[in-house]
Amino acid sequence: MRMRLSSFDGTESIVADCVAPSQHQQLAEAFCDGMPVIPRGAGLSYCAVSAGEGVRSVSSVLLNRVLNFDNINGIIDVEPGICLGNLFKFTTQRGWILPVMPGHPSITIGGCIGCNVHGKNQYREGNFIGVVDSFTLRHPDHGEIRCSRDQEATLFQLTIGGFGLTGFITSVRLKLKPLGCPAVRLRRITVASLAETVEIMEQYKQQAELLYSWNNLNFHGGTFGHGFVYVGVPASSPVYEKAIFRHLKSDERSRMPLSAYSRFTTRLMFDVYSLSQHLSAEDKLIGWARAAFPVNGSEFYFWLFGQRGFREYQLLVPHSRWAEIEEALPSLIRRRKVPITLGSVKLFRGQSDLLHFDGTGMVLTIDVPEGDDAHKFFEDLDRLTLSCGGLVNLAKDGRVGADFVSRVFPGYDRFKRELRAFDPRGRFDSSLRRRLNV
Image (tube, rainbow, N blue to C red; front, side):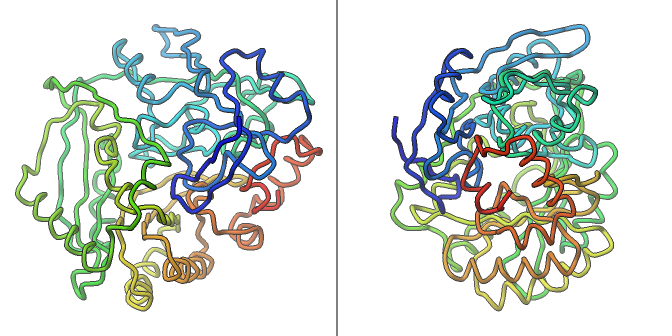
């Protein structure tokens, strides 16, 4: 079936073949005519990871079953199309939880693998690769291959964070952790700057289950970067909250013809949000569903960007270079006069490999409305990232090309070499693959 597929940020739109097999044997039909294919989950990647001109998108949304569950050891086998919300309900009712989950329940497990996502406290839990025990990969030229750290280890590493370019995952084995306490105590700490944000995060990084910030990056002189750090720790007191999970879709934002975000309205919205936080309790008891998926219920944030969409820049820099980011950022924002609709910081610990957005340092996330000023601002951020020895999240930004990525990621050449060795005919393709020239 031909349909229009859009990136979640709304900046890329492709009319492509799309099929949704409900049984594994139907995958063969999707591969049979030799057309390039690419797996597609919920379609919530910010750039066109799961679509391309002349490429058939093979949706996993009907392949969404729990295949096996080991309640003693916390091991679960699932199909790639199961969404985080449904998996969350299944496991938490049995006393287990997936340690690494991004912020919305509509995201699929296949998407988590393809982008090697992180959650709300990457410092403690790492990226999604840490919870994947093994998976079965299907490729029309290689058949089905079982991959783990001990079996087909190179392909295992290439597939997680490989943007669906190695094949279609048919099943995944995940490692859960005990749910433990029935609720989370979420504490809000007011900070005056990005520097203080980092200081607070360093204090709580070991004990927190959740650790992230909200920072006002719209230029206000000495108040630049003020905001809140959110610290979530397990709580023994039960809380009764019904888990109502909302759907998130890339095409719903396009219903608004114009963006609601300007420099004036964005500052006003930030002031209102800041005031609402100050008027609410600093310490709240919340359920795990609310803690795991903070974006759930705030979908209107994305709708307000309208048809033109938005851009997100997510960079990771070593601790030793973070001060350079703090120093340079205010002048870049003031120069380009862009409204910053989101500013957020996370603490990371790990090691990058291939094209994985992973490492030790600080992660800064910035959202802006799409437009010429956004592109110029992001080009400034590209130069700043390069000068600081940083990384960018390739699943978040559809602008960056092969030259920039090869300079940022030391593992670029190896990723390209290993992918082409495994898939020399380019049976799996996408806009992202062409843009990165891998």
